[in-house]
Amino acid sequence: MNNRKLSRFRPIAKGFTLVELMIALSIGLVLFAGVMSVFVGMRTTTVETSSFGELQENGRFAISVLTDDLLRQNFWGDLSGTFSQSSLTTIPGAPGNDCVGGGVNNATFPQAIGPFRTLWGQTIAAGALDPLGCFIMPANTQTMVGSDVIQIKRVISNPVAVPVVGNYYLSSNLSTGGVFAAGAAVPVVNNGRLWQYQHHVYYVRQETVGNNLVPVLMQGRLTNLSMNFSPVIDGIEMIRFMYGVDTTTDPSLPGYGVVNAYISAGAMNQNLWDNAGGSRILAVKMFVLARGALPDPQYNNTNTYQLGDLAFPVNDNFRRLLFSSTVTLYNTSVDSWP
Image (cartoon, rainbow, N blue to C red; front, side, top):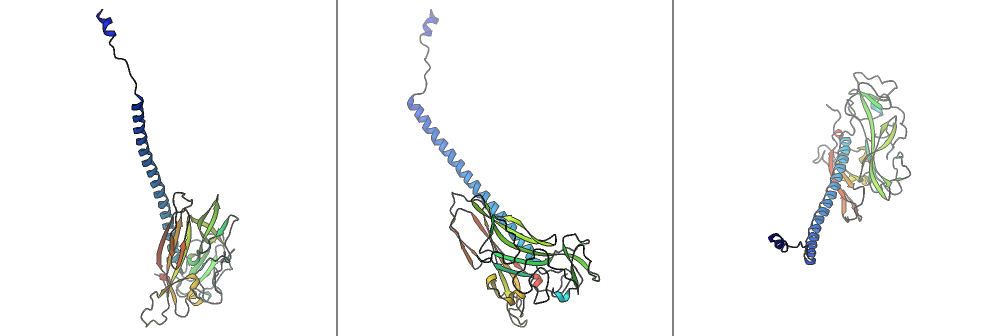
């Protein structure tokens, strides 16, 4: 009897009211919006950090490659004095697809006329997309107008014991030397050592990828007895060089051996390129503009980048970083190396 009476007073299970559900949903939406805001912010920050990290890596690598070559420009192993036909016993014929810059003596190997140019550059103009006559341009590529091209000649710093077929070499001592192709007769040079000969060319090429033009830093070098080009690194949009020139020709005057001015490639004259008339190129200031491979619709770039004397304005959705460095050309001021 008592049990039956108690069962009549059991509480009835109840759900949430409509008001309670609306309040809970509102709180949930607020929390969800907060979490999504944090997630979107973190994702945007991650994309930006990753993009700038890639730009920094590309730009620094390009600066490193160019610096390494410029530091060793005009290095000729044991050979002292001026690198020219008068100091060489043998010179091979021109390599395949030879890159010939401005001036009368600016091919891969020295000619019998004018000073041999071991360093030369030019700004790419719309009507001169291949100023050296050796660029290999597939159908979906084009040379970057406004960027510079630079050529550098030297031997690789470490002497070799055995020539490798497909390469050129310099056999030299302090007073004379001879250039030859591996497989040909080695020039007779008393107490001479062998150094691999190199002629490097750098320029920027744009490649069509989907709806975008992706800039690539290209390097030309002697391989298989020919000048061949290959990409060094993607995302390099512009390279520009300012050449530090000493125009004080009298060693007794103040300022001799010091850079008097930095001059762009287009403003350099023949004597300056030839280091003639007492003037010398003592340094090179380089500018490298790195650009992201893909645009970011959330980012608008309206900056103007100053590459030496060149102002480069943009108005697009690509992120960019500008790098600069100055390289002293030590080999310009010495006649022999330790």
